Amino acid sequence: MAAYRRLCSRLGLTMLFHMLLMNAVYPAVVFIYELIAGGWEYRVYSIGYSLLSAALYLLCFMLPVLFFRILARGEAPVSMGMEPAMPPRTVAMVAAVLGVNLACAYCNSIFMQMLDSLGIGNVLDYIPMSSFIYPEDIVFLHLSLALVPAFCEEFLFRGLICARLMPYGKTAAIVGSAVLFGLMHGNLGQLFYTTVAGIMLGWCFVETRSIWPGVIAHMLNNLMGVLSEYWYTFLPVEKASAVDFFSTAGIFLMALPALIWLVAAREREKPILGLGNTRPLDVGAVSLLPAGEGVRGFFRPSMTVYFVLAIGGILLYMLLGTLFSWLEAAGIPLNM
Image (cartoon, rainbow, N blue to C red; front, side):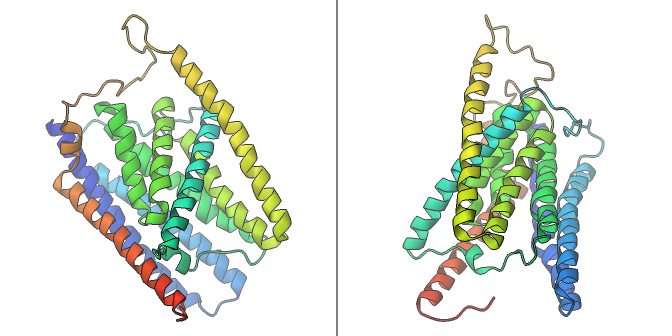
């Protein structure tokens, strides 16, 4: 279908624009900030860095949405799910998303350990990350690592991409936005579980027609990583491990019954006598694409270029991580 191909071409261009912002503009501005603020007192520097990171992240996700709107000018608008809709199942959905994401993160950790045992390193292990020096740092790290990324990423991948793909089927919308979400993270260490997370968040968006349940789940998922680092920085190892264990167990204990309840509720809502699902706004319940056209139409030239560059970047990071791992094993210091 011509409309579907045009949409995928525009989404490909939008993702290329986003890639340019994240890989050129963002690091360039941060580099300039490092030159200017390198001699500042730590707390001032840290607060400034967190606020700058949050602002840059917002721009790197808001501008591609504006770019897409320019490309699609003249077309009928599509709701991005910005309405504050919180259906009764929201809490169960958030718990289910957190549980599945956490399980995938553990599986991913085992996979990365297997690769590490084979000498295949993860470049993220050698890149300095934002960390805690003072307890109050949690406020700014929550802003720059949890809250802002959760909103920005849901706004682009669910509010724009998933919503625009919805008329061509729920599967196309959920899987297409999830794969792009996984590739956006740009490294093998995050590819698997962020893609699965994208599927869960896409499902959440499709079921609620709102980005806000996904924003909440996404923010809580990111916040768990921030809190884990906080505990291991300011608590004795034994206490930090206990807090980490019980918080993880609590999430799983909430997620399992939530998943069971959601599946049971879904079974009760199955169409009767072929009359179909009568829920309002059930756009995308049936794909409008001919068999096989979904994948072929998705990979327009711009989208293909994005996939090539994204996968190439992941392979490059993997090669760099492997190189750093070998150098470290050989006793050669790495100063990054």
